[in-house]
Image 1 (cartoon, rainbow, N blue to C red):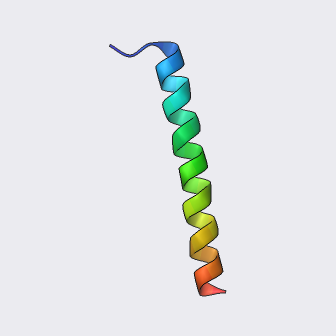
Image 2: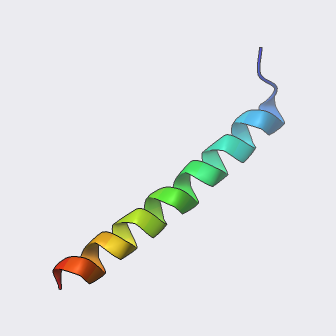
Length: 30
C-alpha cells in the first residue's frame, strides 16, 4: 500500500511531466 507522501510525489511528478508534454506539443504545432 502506498503512503501519502508517495502519492504526493507521484502526483507532483505526473503534473510536471504532463505540463512539459503539453508545452512541447504546443511548440511543435505553433
